[in-house]
Length: 266
Ligand code: HPA
Image (cartoon, rainbow, N blue to C red; front, side):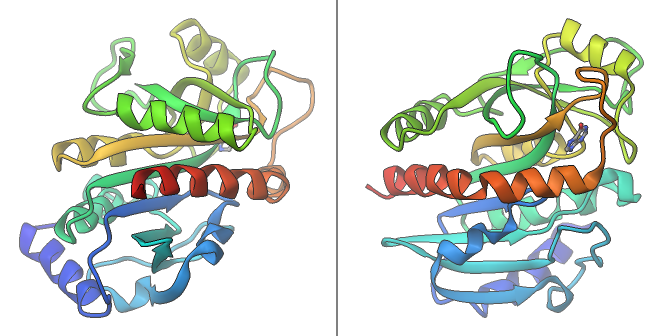
């Protein structure tokens, strides 16, 4: 993906927007209804954006929705591209590059993830304070924990904690581990992720966070812990459970994100 191809994609999107967005939000599995909260929405299907591939994952819709929260212009991505779908990393990160071309300053990146902490609950929301790359794509060595700037904005984390408190939404804080997928992890992998300091396991977000940091965006990650990760409980995991938990917590998720956006706009 060359810079000019990203520019082409951005140009096609910019032409359709009444204003440049300040904040972009990537919505994870089961969380895509959040876009219903935007006023005067403008919808752009991915199929109408040059160089965007087709989506394959159930629960991911495949469109950008622009709109306002109060006076804040927001661009929401319903559906993302995963490395496990055999997309190259430059496709996985294309939406983030496009956001940067559109002048976005803040990225809120969300996902569904498995909960590796037995003391937490399914449906808990977790502010991401750091991440682990557990894919072993780049290096066979033990993943190192990455936290703080420029990948995890301390300012946005503080603002998210405040918004959660004001809306009375309990949130966890922890480390997100990027796993290759497409299958869920094994219990042994989850044990190792915990030992390395991880609290949640998922199949996205880290490549997007890296690209966003390169682009100089301020980044806030939020995980919806849709299920216990493998081996934490006796029951088997499935994608339906991920979507069902997303349905159950989507109202709290929406209130939290709206609270954060209102704080950003004020
Ligand atoms: N593992 C990886 N990704 C996930 C999970 C999980 O348990 N749940 C939702 N996404």
